[in-house]
Structures are given as C-alpha cells and as structure tokens.
Amino acid sequence: MSDLPQRPVSRRLQRRLCGLVIVGYGALTGTIHLYHLLGDSSPGLIPTVYGAFIPFCLSIGLVAGGVWAGRRSIHPRYLQKLVIWTITGGAVFLVSGMLFVSYQTAVGGALVAQLYVLSNVATGGAVVGFVIGQYAGQIQRQNEQLDRYQQRLEREHERYVVLFDSLLNPAIQYDLLGETAVIRVANPAFERLFDADSGTMSGTRVESAIEPSNIETSAFDIERALHADTAVQNEVRLKTAVGIKDFLVHVIPPAVSSVGTGHLVAVDISDRKQYVRRLEVLNRVLRHDLRNDAGVIIGNTQLLTELNGPSEYIETIRTTATDMVSLSETVREIENALDSDQRSNGTLKLQQILNGCIDRAMTDYPNAKIVNQWECDSAVRILGNDQLAIAFDNVIENAIEHNDRDVPEVIVTVTNEITDFVTVEIADDGPGLPERERRVFNDGTESELEHSFGLGLWLVNWVVVDSGGNVTVDETDAGGGLIRIHLPKATISSSQQEASVVVDKPKQ
Image (cartoon, rainbow, N blue to C red; front, top):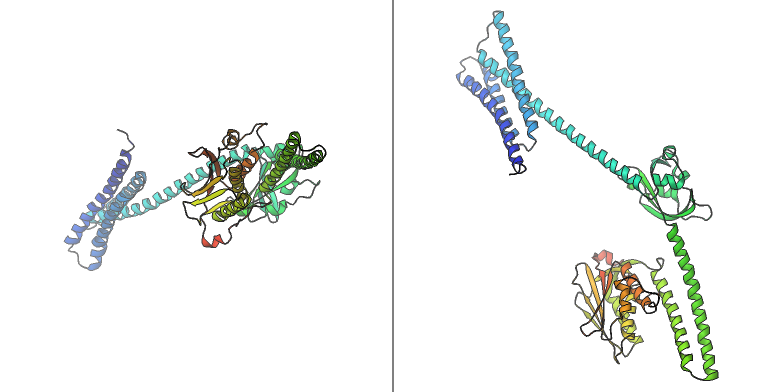
C-alpha cells in the first residue's frame, strides 16, 4: 500500500503522543500536589496556597496544554520541540532544586517536605519550558514561512527576468523619481534595436531613449503616458538604430503596476502599417479608375447602340461594365463598413436590426416573401458592431437575387440554443450557395477566377467575426441555402441599456 494515505494518520498519532507526554507530566506532578494539598497539616492559608494549591493549578494547566497541543493541526516536529522544551524546563528546575536542597542540607538547614519542594520547582520549570517552547515554535514557523515567501519571490523574480529578457519586442522597466521617469533596466531586444547598453542606460531619462521622429508631429505624448493613472497604448514613429519605424507603444505606468515600477513595450508595426498604406492607395486608385473607366465604357455602348442599333455584343459589354461599377460600389461599401473610425462595438437590439433589414428587402424586392420567426425572447440583445445591418442585408439580398423561383421565399429564424450565443438562420428555397461561395466561410480563401460573387459574403464574414461571432453555411432539407450567423448574447443591467448602440439602418 502507498504511504501517502497513511501520512495524515501518522502525523495525527505523533501529535497525540506529544500531547500525551505533556499530559502525563502534568498528571504526575498534579497527583503529588493534590496529595500534598489534601494531606497538608501545616498551619496557615498562605503556605497551603503557595506550597500546594498553585503548583496543583500549574499541573492542571500542563494537562490542558498537552490536550490542546495534541489537537493542533501543525507539523509534529513543532510539538516535539514543545515537549523537549517542557521536559527540559522541568529537568533544569528540578536539578536546580536538588542542588539547593543539597546546599541547605550541607550547611545544616534541612528543608521540610523536600519531595514537595522538588515537585513544585519541577512543575514551575515545565510550565516555563512549555511557554518558551510555544513561542519558540511560533517564531520558527513564522521564520520558515518568511523563508518560503522569500524563495517564492525569488522564483517569481527569476521568471520575470527570463520573460522580460526573452521578449522579442523592445521593453524597458522604469521608475518615477519625482517628475522624472528614469530607466531601471532594458531588455536585449531594446538594446539591439535602439543600439543602447542596458548598463549605461540605467538611471537615464526614458524620453532620452524613446525619441519620437521629428519628421512628423506625433499625437502621442510619451511623457504624459509615463505618468498616467491608467495603462496607455498608441501608435508612434520612433528613431531606431536602423532608421525610423512605426511602433504600437504599450505603457503600464507605476500607478497601475503591482510592483511599483512602470513598463514600456514597443511593438514594431512598420511592415503592417506600410502594407495597410499600400492597400489603401491601391484600393482608392483602382476603385476610382475602375469606376471612371466603366462609366466611359457604358457611355460608349449607348452611343454604339444609337448609331448601329441594339446588339448582343454591345449589351454584353454594357452588362460587364455595369458589373464593374457594382463591384466598385461593393468595395466602397466594404471599406466604409470595416473602417475602424466609422464603426463602434456595443450592445445592440437584434429585433430592431432585423426588422430594418427585412423592411428594406421587401421594399427593394416586392415580389419576395420574407418570414421572420422568433424562437427566443424577441427583446434579446447582442454584442457587436453597428455595421451588422449591412451583413444581414447582404445575406437576405443574396438569398433573393440568386433565387430562381417566381416568388422567392426567405425565412429568418432567431434561436438561443447555444449558451451565451444568439443564432440567426437565414434560409431560402432557391438553388443554394455555389461551392465556390462556400469556400469564403469554409476555407477562408478565394481563387483568382472566383472573386466576383464572394465579396458580399466576405463582408458578411468580416463584420460578424469583428462582432465576436462566426458564420456557417449549410443547406435546407429542400436543397436551398442556409446561413447561420452566431452572435454573442449581451447580459446587461437596465442602467447599461440606456448606453446601448441602436442601429436601424446601415451606414453608407
């Protein structure tokens, strides 16, 4: 059998044995004092109290102390030392008493009732030893606890140092000396990127090491961030050993740090910023040129039609150019919907959003039939960005436009079967989504030749993911398209509801 289950029993037995030794000591001396108290024929109350009653009470105290010690949930080694202190105290006092009795006898001053005298001093010594042992054990436990805390702090400090030094991003730890932020230590990544030495940097001002680029004015006040009352992050361009780079700077000031020092971490976002800038330029240029060129094509097809009459080839050119304009408008809509400066996340009224989308779809497609079914509380609120209406508009319009029936039917069903999520199912009775459009959700990629129809679905996916949800594609039992949009459910108090984001139409 394993020794582990037996350890608590063994410790309990050791504690009881230690307590029993103290109880036995107190019972032995107490018996002698009781016999002395009952058989004391000496005259006077004071000799009886001091010579028999008080020692008897001390012995009772030892018995009580032994019982208390045997029941304490502490390690037996502390109780063993308590027993040693108790027995040692009694023995030291007993030996001292015997020497005193021997001395009195040697000088001719024999003591009366020497046994009682020796038992009295032995009892007093045991009580003194018990008290000293108790305090000594308590001090030892406190010291051991402090040692454990110290070791734990040293381990945590070692982990922190390893983590700090292993960061791939430049980071510094700083202190506030009055109104000045000075560097305590910098990690190797900071030393490499800013061509600095952590040893020589210690004690220097943070602003002297973190120098914003003077090529353009930065809206980020580093000095204010270092003295802030809350954590701060912002984008800033900094001078480095390899030139000017863009960083996302995170500042955790001492006011919010549990260790009383501040930290600054700079994440290099130069490549990402450059990539975004290039995409923005290419997007605007291509979209602008695409729309203008398509407009020229459409205008010339009209002239050709007027000069030569209707033609299948001219109509194909016109349709293709019109699709190019539509594609340009879709790209503009996606750009606006995903622009972080134009969208905000918060608590939304799902019913209000869906009702607005359905009303717009029925206005644009009067021959369509749209059914809205609620299988949960219609007052449910969700967490998301205020562009969700655009996502629902795209799914509903796609279900209607690609439906080959005379009266397209779309069924919008809202359920709450998944914990903490609300599901909006949009089903149609059309031919279903083509496989190439499903790849938008299943694979997350599109090929070069399959990109025209998928843009709207990409917009749906991006907006929903930005809201903390996800999109899945399936088929109805009849083979129609079925898109499920899962959105996080909001749990808010009545006071928070007033601050909810209200959306009834998409932003264009």
